[in-house]
Amino acid sequence: MLTGGLFIEETKGLAICPACQREFANRGDFCEKDGLYAIDKEDFKTTDSLLGRKIDGKYIALRRVGRGGMGSVYEAKQLGLDRTVALKVLSQSLKNRSQAFERFLREAESIGRISHHNIVKLYDFGVDPNGLAYLAMEFVDGRVLSSLAPSELSAQLVAHICMQILSALKVAHNNNIIHRDLKPENIMLSATSSDEYCVKVLDFGLASLINSSRISVVGEALGTPWYMSPEQATASQVTFASDIYSLGCILYELISSKPPFPGNRPYNVMMQHVNADPPELVSRPELEISNEFKAFVMRCLQKKLSRRYKSAKSAIRALQTLPEWLAASLSQPRQSIRIGMKQLVIAAETKEELSSDLLPAVDPAQQISAEHQKAVPHPLKPLPLYMRVIQTLWQHRLWLLLSLFIIVTVVFIYWGLQ
Image (cartoon, rainbow, N blue to C red):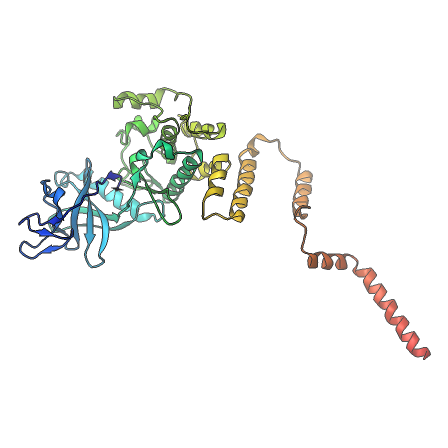
């Protein structure tokens, strides 16, 4: 199990008080003797001083589920609401470093500004009386993208995952937020009632807030080397297209089983992002990827910003035209035939839009004619019977009125002769 993009091992057995070692039936049970809360026996072996303790008077750290450069993530219980949360705590060694605290604040602001089912929810943020800074977030029961078994992969699943990531990025980009650290470990898959592979995008700790005084300064390379955009690798100004490049690296790895520029030396990998063209995308033996989808991935990996999709919105429009996405949308259990057909219509319209720049200008007279033709009902979709009857009567209204007049006149003359 995973949360916050980190692996969680299921533990069994009795819980234990971290102070007196008294055994309890469940994690989170209160030990009246020491005023602490029971934790798993396995976690008792660690020297983490936060386990079993109350944080800011409202959270109990029950289990550490991960540790990173900026701090640790705990499975915690929120008192009062009796809710399980993922509690991200800034390392005590970093709390006096303004830059680290700034990034911690940035993550809170980034997640707090956006709400989307494919983005982890932020519940709370604060600093407890002891100076411990924390984020309380949605606890996601799932696994990171990198743990997806090759036997599970299909072209449709890759398209399905890609669309969800783009949907999350679209909301972030609409709020002027650039993630800056997209990688498989920051993308979780959890099973829901309607989707076995529901995406949650995590870790906005390096996110850039456009038009914000707290945006990272140019000249500081931040991110993960294997998924960095060229502009990140050279510490240049990042844009929404930087996230698209990182997504391209993720898709490349999903399809081919390795990132575009593998290697053990981060600096060398970063320089390849800047100077080298990615190798031809060759899919895993078990995957059948269309040339259109491969071209989509390679466009995401274009080094020049002008050749890359500029934002998640433009990438979504392109993805909607791919055969893998059409197949994925039709195969989803929650989809109906009507929704599936709508996807086909969207794809046709999007393809026409995307290719419009390559077509010659249309004569205004021809354009009017085309619009007129659009207004005429398609022969394969006739009007309902009653509408056709009304339309026919309306078209012959003059003859109907004349016939009615003649009939009435004849009737009156007949009655007069009687």
